[in-house]
Length: 305
Length: 305
Image (cartoon, rainbow over all chains, first blue to last red; front, side, top):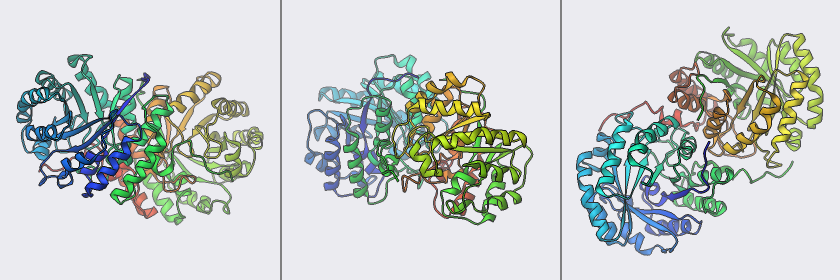
């Protein structure tokens, strides 16, 4: 199996994680983002600019972002569902914005209240606006590996959104396993469909949930296919809104733990990351499910009997 | 990546699972084994013959085994730590026995109260005894991927135990990831060390715990290297005695779910297996952590909004 020398991780706990937990105070969000910034992570999705009515957890996005320490080596980003959100993110000072659109019609409607065509139609304008403001746009394609309402999503459908994103001028794409339906097979089939038409120069990221235990197997499959960018959430925080009680995002410390053991560099200090997972656990106020948080890394030994 | 047409799973919840849970009545064990037998599983590790003082959970092994339905298509087995246990298993009527020995000196001492050399010295006699009684012996090498007391275990050490098992006349070996220290790298390194000297004819099985989220990534790595036999525990029952609160064995339904999605046959009815995981949950009386049990398989859709 192929493995790269280095993998780039984007930490999404402050946004994707906390957006799917009961609301927490802005001060806790700031504390979490600043702690993450000191672990060696080079990319952090900090907040989203969405409707405060639909997502009260992110109503204080601008306030949080204003107070966060801005580490020069870190690429902070915000997520937005539409042009209005992108504008707010740019106005708040972000230079990297993720725009989300679902491969599934039903999920796009449920998630951001419009059709896929409507989302795509806005993309060229969003990309032009970002270019004008010297910012970068990534298109996150939600439900890339399956939709909780529609079931399997044809990889060709995802490929068409990638093409639309490229034509609109987006510099990057991400594939979201929104409800943990991804499996090694789905990763392979998606890349079979997407890589030939997208070409080798479009940066691609994968975002896995560990809802059904496959997150690290998916990641390994993606590595073997040349993908070197992944989202992860410290402590695995963030649920799966359509699978109550199920675990959410793959835990950053589980990803780092496996990659470092393989000799793949991430730039992250695993011990500092585990301490930050403990902070995340304290902030959300429930025991988190990350195995590396609970059991410690494989190098943490038990005293001999 | 290479994938086989078929994988053979051995269900270990009745033994490895329940051995690491608070004791449950014999009737529940019988109910669980019989329910597992109706899912299409072809191998079940039913009980162990160990010291009832050290492991009260298995004190009723002979009673449980006497009452279990014996399905002709299923290979039932028992685990034993020594010659005395093997004798008890044979006397109870088992024709397949797993003898456990650790690759780690410290763990073997803690687990079965003797040195690795003492365990290995008994093997030829055990294999001769089994042969006489027309039974098969498998040697399970615990801590094959790391020891909670000693840390990394040199793969060459595991390879020497495989050689000793072959010389003694054992027909099969299994590699136990006793406390979830296995990773894709460790699987690869172990097979690099073991496969050349063992040769292609020795059946090998891998036993993973999902303590640190790597179980299915490990399994994928092993598949790619030609391994087609795995242990798994329905509902993921069974803890990790040296990592309190951590998840234990990889859940059978998570393994079957991923393999079927890949088009790999297991002979198991996933729906029946999930119902049996629900029974296991009822028996142990705590919410189990299997993602496929909690969220359902990826094919179980949410009603459209």
